[in-house]
Image (cartoon, rainbow, N blue to C red; front, side):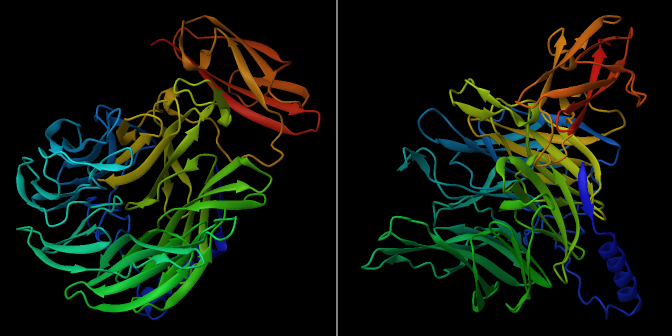
Length: 589
C-alpha cells in the first residue's frame, strides 16, 4: 500500500497541540468535536445529527479482520444501517421485477446477527433509520414503477416511529407522504428533523406532532431564451442549536448544443428552535455532503474541493484534494468526516493519461487551516465517506478482481462489467498507515459499498450490487489469524502510468491459488503476457525466503502435507520495467 505522509506537518501539528494545551488553547483555538464523538453508537446516517461520521468506537483492534456475521438475505437493497444499544437497524428497499413495491426495517442483534424483529408492511425506506432512546424513526418514499408513482392503499405512507425493542408502531405522521431523495432523519433532543418535498419538518419525537416546517428557497423555472434553473434540497445537519441546509442549483442553457449544466450550492443556516433564517452562503459546484460541528461547517464540492465555514457563515478556508500520483485528475470527492481537529475525505482519481489507471485516496486535513496532514492511496475505487473511530479511520470501496480486467459476456448480459468485491480498509488516524484490509465475497458486477459504521469492536458495512436486486450487510471484527485467501487483497498499490509488464499466472491444477489443494501434490506455474510488451525475464521465489532461486517462464512447487506456500514472481519486460506479485497456495486442513 502506498501512502504519502507529511512528517513535518504531523510534527508541527503535534507541537501546536502541545503548545495549545499548555496555553489553555490560545494557539489552536476551539477544536471541532463531533457531537457523537463521545458515544459508541451510530444513530443515523453519518453517525449523528451533525453528520460528522465520528464515534469513539475502538473497532477491530487485532492484526487482521474477519467476518463476525453477514446477512445477504435482505430481500432487497439496504438503504442504511444504524447501531445502538446492542441492535443493528437496517433499512431495506425491496425490489421486484416491475415496481419498487415496498420497504422493510430489520432489527438484528449487533454481535450475532440474530433477527429480533422485522417490519415489512411499510413503503420503501428512504435513507438510514435514526435511533434515539427506545424509538426507531423511519422515513419512507412513494412507490414507483416506470418512473410513475404507484399507490397501494393497503400500506399507509408517511413517517414512522417504531418501538426499538419490539418493532411495534408508536406513531406515524401522514401530513407528508414522500420523504424523498433518501435524506435520512436525525433526532436532536425531543425533535425529529426530516425532509419531504424540499421542506424540513420538525416533529415531536414522542408524539409525531408537527412542530414547524422550514422551506429553503427552491424556486426555479425557465426563461424565454431557454435557460432552466432547478433548485432542490440535498441534505441537512444540526449542530449547537443551528440547522444547516444544503440547497443545490443547476442552470442549463437549452438554447445551445452543449446542455452542460452549471452547478452551485447554497448553505442556509436557521435557528433550529424557531426556524428563523440566520445566513446564506453560496459556492460554485455541486455539493457531495456536509458535516457540522460546534465550531464550523464543512462542505465538499465535486470533484475535489473541501470548504470550511465558521458558524456565522464566513469562509475560513478552501482546499483542493488530489491523489499524489502521476498527473492525477480527480473525478469524485466524498462527504467529509470531522473529529478532534481533523477533516477526512475520500477521492476517486485517475491519471490524465487514461481512465483505467485509477487511484482511490483518503486525505486527512487540518481542520484549522485545511493543510493536508497525510494521504493514503489504493487501487480500489473508493465509494464511501471515511468514518472515524477512537484510533482508526475506516473507508470502503469497490475492488476489481484480476487487476481490473474486464469480464466479457457476464451473466447479466452487459458487454463490459467489472468483476469486483467490497473492500474495507482500517487506517491509523494519526498517520494514515494501513492497519488491515478485508475483502468480501466475489461479485459478478460492480459492488457498491455506501456505508461504513464503526461501533464497539465491530465495523458495519452495507453494499449493493448495481446489476441485481439484493445487497449485503457485513459485520467485521478483529482476528488474530490471517483471513482466508478469498478475503485477502492482491498487492493493490496504484499503478504507475508506465506500470510495466502485464501478465497472468496460469496454474495446473487450474486456479490453484483459489483452491484447497491435496497435501504433497505438485502445482505447475506459468507466466503468460497479456499485452504487447515482451517479457524479458521471470524470476521465482518459491519458498518465501526473499531469494529468487528459479528463472524462466515456468516453475513448480510441491505442497506440504498440511499448510501453505508463499510464491513471489518478479517479471521484467524489454523496457526494463518490473512487476512483483505474491501468491499463496494452501492445502486442505
